[in-house]
Length: 451
Image 1 (tube, rainbow, N blue to C red):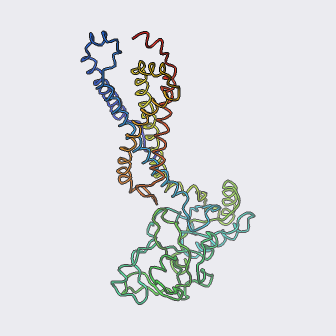
Image 2 (image 1 turned 180 degrees about the vertical axis):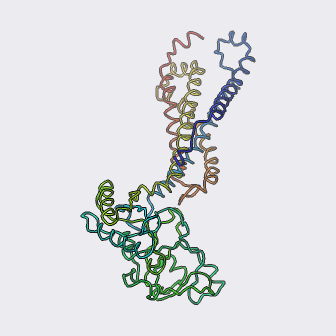
């Protein structure tokens, strides 16, 4: 649940909920009380009929059941939309092998390794010691945690060589990654063409860059991007031109649902300020934490390891709100489904009670249990079918309302719609079963003898 620490039980909210419950109960009792006061008691007793309120009451019950089913279809379909959307988010291809990645956060502020050459030397020494540990395959420094947003690591404007100011103005905003040579090996980001950064790509050498495949396709459509040049800023920017030396598969490292194209530059040629290490390892996180702390302490006892987290734990952040939305709507959907089933059951139980004489006559005339069950089930399923038909219109409206919360799911998602329909029809059929079974046990002698 997002921001759980800020949630509290509020007395005003509790009192409001209590007042709404009382009001709902009062409103639910008004209609039956109104119809009960209008009964003609003498005619009811003379006719030998039960005090059921007459045809108007029966029609009112049916209308309520149809409404319940329609609302249940709407909210169950909405829950289906959000649940399938969450499933699509969980199953996304990240563009990198995230299953064995562990992030280690170092506290460097206030130490001699906070910046400059001391910073680089510390990173080199720690990486070397960690890679020497059994079970750790590769280590690379990074600047930000995944899904932490841009935090200044973005490039709003860039220019490709040969672009006019108008063309450059249409370039997309980029994620900017300042990376180290083992970055692509550690994350296992597939190389599409060209090469990755090497140790020779350092300060004082020609500046280079690697672009994601989607950026290359958009900036140089139909052309080979290797050897092309681009720079930060507008065409009149004084920033140095950077030569593209590689193209890699797009990743979802910064954003999960709507990733932007990425521009990679070598950290020695841009900013060397990493305080995070990413380890590709087969070891459990608890063991990685112990190894990391001991090896970092061996390099500098003043540097602390403040956090050790697997990639899966960090992925929970962007999934928290979609998961909460799906859970909350799912609870409402199950509640609506239960209420609809109870409503169908109640109406069909009353239907059997009120038509017991007719059912007794049918049985006396030779109707089998199958015929009686079909009679009761048919009545209940007709009400459910009408509610489902109306509810599909509500599901269409619900899909449009929650469209902003959906990922890769159409607001008229057929599986969600079909699932809602089947669930409500099945629940209605099950709710009709007990009254139908009770109807087959009507004793025609006893029923007809009292009439």
